[in-house]
Picture (tube, rainbow, N blue to C red):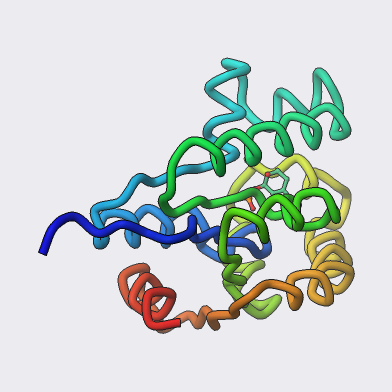
Length: 171
Ligand code: S3P
């Protein structure tokens, strides 16, 4: 057998802390296909962290960049694409993803997400007086949108990154 050729890019979507980056990287390694990461791409192009971009240029600027980067990465090559948690929210981005990719929602409950994000200071949206409450509000608003993904894979505390990569593959 030769190298695997994906028919479509696998686009991982879901909340902050769902494991999109870690699982995407593991899955790409497993399949020997390129790993693409929209947040990392935005950061390296801007030579700034996501938090700095939000602070300096604002969220709308970041969202514009995010759409451009997703568009470009989907054009460039097929692979596993991990997106930021807000990437699937606009109609425009969902359309880009559905044209060139297959979307997979990494579905985790609020408790798991909170456990994973609470110690980190890298997420500008959670820099509020009550980050748990903010995460809960974001979660509730977004679940109905993530439900529109082509596939869903449930993340559980007991599942390792490799378990999750395997589950995405099976899905
Ligand atoms: C965001 C999630 C982040 C990053 C930005 C906004 C969001 O990515 O894109 O801070 O709107 O949920 P992760 O989901 O990788 O944390």
